[in-house]
Image 1 (cartoon, rainbow, N blue to C red):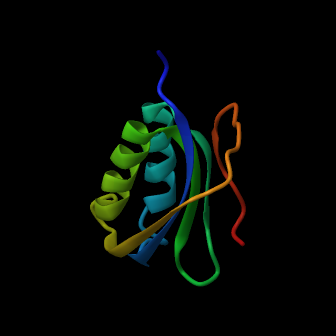
Image 2 (image 1 turned 30 degrees about the vertical axis):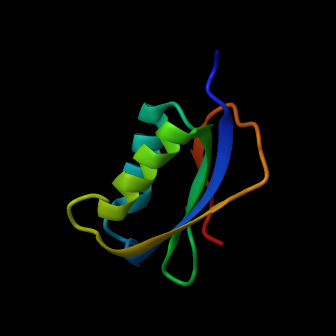
Length: 95
């Protein structure tokens, strides 16, 4: 039996731009086998749409709450999103 796939929208707040957060987040998502994307937002947050099993997504969220060493994450907001199918995980331009 395969795990049910979910799509989550995550938004990291704090010192998460200019510290390697987006690249490290993409690396973690790829290592977890997630599909989706990551991008910086003009308001200083980092936004992620990720699709995978609940376990994979919870692992990513846990990582996002810490981030890479130079980051200072104040909070990570999460909500479920409409299901999307992705072939891979990618960086997107700042929005």
